[in-house]
Amino acid sequence: MKRIWLCGAALVLWTGEASAQIALSGNDSKAVLDNGTLRIVQNPPPDTVTILDLGANPPRVVGQVQAPHSVVGPPTSVALTPDERFGLVASAQRIDPANSTRQIPDNRLSVIDLRATPPAVVQTVETGAGPSGVSVNRAGTLALVANRNAGTVSVFRIADGRLTPVSTLTVGPPASGVSHAQFTPDGRFALVTRDGDSMVTVLRVEGENVTLAGRDITAGIRPYGMGITRDGRWAVAANIGRSSGDQDTVSLISLAAEPFRTVDTIAVGPTPEGIQVSPDNRHVAVTVMNGSNRPANHPMRGPGLLVMLRIDDGRLVRVAQAEVGSWGQGVAFNSDGTRVFVQNMVEREIQVFGFDGQRLTPLPDRIRVEGGPSAFRTADR
Image 1 (cartoon, rainbow, N blue to C red):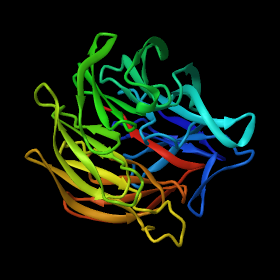
Image 2: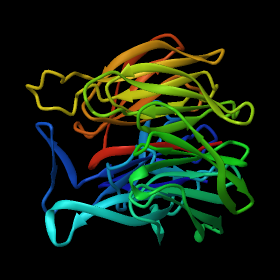
Image 3: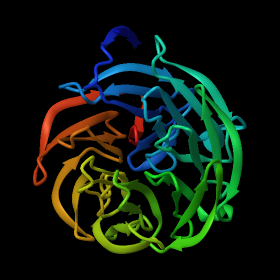
Image 4: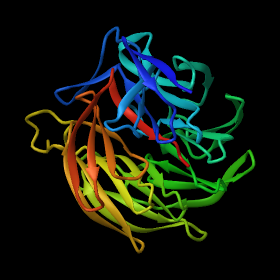
């Protein structure tokens, strides 16, 4: 069956073929960098979510939806159900109605029907303060939302295209900076990054009952974003450090046996923001700010970086690096791992690279989006 989706002023055709791979880009229209200083746009246009088909060559935009979103938090604040039918979009911050020059914590999670014509927000649910990283289990029945300003994780049931609150689990104090919650592929556990106190907390999942497993893993300084390999053997945490310009790190966590533990950490550059693992479980893509969000004359300003790592017998090995745009955010692979997509917040674009396991090759495809792209995901399967 063919669907025609409206994107801006253009009609875009999506065939729904098996080769399609849907991705979501959450775009923040409120926050911009003004020579290294975060500024809140006055009377901004609505935030948006861009729907892309990464299976097409070149990749293409197949829809766009207005939904509240925020650059605050790791760039995993959007998620898809495994069947690519629904998208979840968190909004960590909103403009303060009492002072339009600043932001305050939000508490909204939007549900988007991706197969509606055109795609549309069909539900908005409340979370804790500052909803950030979001994930859906492989069964498509449960969602977790890390509430960055509350120290909690919200648990939602997914059924018939609707989210129903199940529980709210306290992971740590609000200052713990609960950032992202990610299910393991078997659905029995979830890992929660805490950049406020530099820990990764393990949750136990039994049906809809989500509890603390009694295990906090030590990673690097301020673990933030996270990815887990499809085979469930490894997790990787991006440790964003203290924004001091020093080398920051990525940690490799073994999930092969309990208790889970960190087995390796590698330096990747200042402030690794986005992180994802390849479909073949072998590679890790990391976006590194590298001072690209600093003022033009700052001595620690540098080009944004895409760093490729290989998981090699329980160790992380750097295999490739390329320059990207400024204030890099999310990163994603296509379904066979031969292309890597990077969000450049300042340029308001998604940059595309070819990857052969050893080299990164810049491709001419640059996908423009409305707003600053600040979260990027494909379906976890």
